[in-house]
Length: 452
Image (cartoon, rainbow, N blue to C red; front, side, top):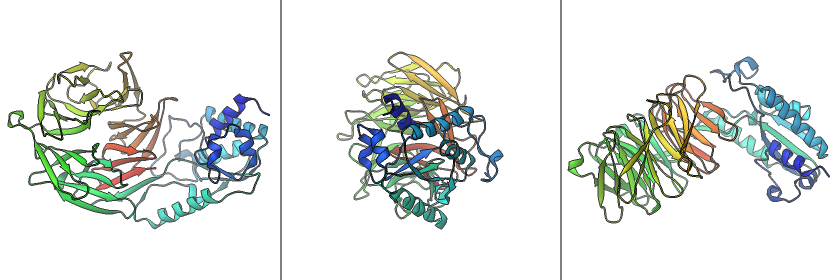
């Protein structure tokens, strides 16, 4: 039997994202035995790539010079996968790969062979694109076909699936919020409405929010309803998900025009919100009691987040800082990143309470740990302008890039960025997700985009 460290290595290297027709294998105490029993489909992503090179737009799939290819480390890792498989005496039957050079090279270095499968190409497609539907159907057939007993099928692929959904022309969707029922809410900023997309059908519904509405942010509250920060109405707005009834909570007249931005709920069910004109505030949904505070440093409060402990932090774009709100007193304490004038735009907490910040002016991603009071920054590849930041349930960090029209994934454990290019002018302003899905609003193209 191979040593335990080899089993751990092959488990990590093979990265069995899908153990179809044998889900129990994922928790088996003897992974080597389970793999030798076969009847499994192993889905691998390609090995480590050279981050100094990004895919051209457009990519010529048959031309490796237009693509980001394996690094020396990636080639070594791919060979290690092959050695591990041989030492475990695994019987690899079919090895299928996308046509991209980095996936083919990973497959051939690991297993000595590969057959190109169009179902693994993973291209950007619209909801109505028949080619995309055929590709998804073919991929499902591949993953759902159980190999013979004692053998394994290996699929080597490039990236998650990127899909786009058109919304009514002129909507200018700004923020998105996936709902518990599988639909997705979005703010149709230029039409003064809240939109709802059903991804199963591609159908959209618009709910008018009132004369003068210009909704910016939307989140789903503990009550399952969408809550909107509406700059045009200078109010917090709730829409009942069942009846679509609209309820408004206007800011006090003394607040003036707040230029409302985004909101978050704390663990007590209180909604906290920001306004770029230099305010932040709180709303108690049950009583409707609202209080507005003047932000230290004046204009700029933008993104806002709640940590697992229940602490509320916001980012100030114009002030180039983040701030922690004392939920009892309402006082905000400023914490400044190491880069001066970086333009902290959005902020999000990971599962450990560390704060991730998109630095709009500096083209960087920053992390602040309140427990140690330490900062760290990473520069995004290329001439990037990071707008939104979101941390998913696996503590993977996602950003939107205005500079080159795309979405960027950052893996903290490796310190690597992976770019998902979008068509020019997408202008994705905000991200939210649920397990297995990341949603964004293409404000410049009247589309929603999901990465699965």
